[in-house]
Image (cartoon, rainbow, N blue to C red; front, top):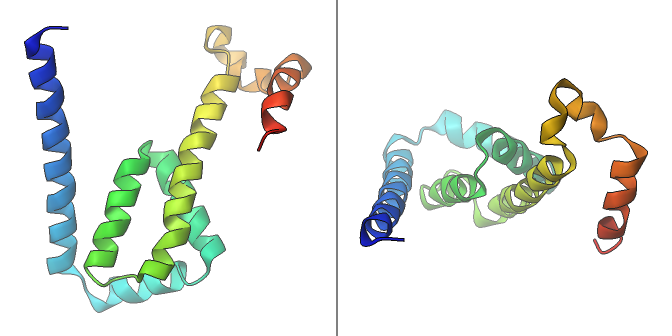
Amino acid sequence: MSIFHVIALFGGLALFLYGMRMMGDGLKHDSSGALKKAMGKVTNSPIVGFLLGLCVTAVIQSSTATIVLTSGLVGAGIITLHQSIGIILGANIGTTVTGQIIRLLDLNAGANSFLNVFKPSTLARSRPSSAYC
């Protein structure tokens, strides 16, 4: 790994963090009563907040982005810290579930890769790891 790779790595990380910060600042300035009311209804129940965090993480494939967005919403006063706990837990578990789905899929199987998840050999392979959860 050369010095250029290291510089590119840190530059990309800095750009990512800068973008997340700008998004959080934008939420603070543009927070309206309608957004606060809608997010209050959605995150009022921890279970619904958990499912929201799980789905958002599954769609955008980044628990970090989900958590930073959630902390931006808390910082802007749109949701409370208590309401954000379910979203953050859902984001973390959503990353794990996404990783497990990718692990279970046989990427060399082509069109039948989704069906291979339900094969007995795949389920037998995943059973010992689920015993530790």
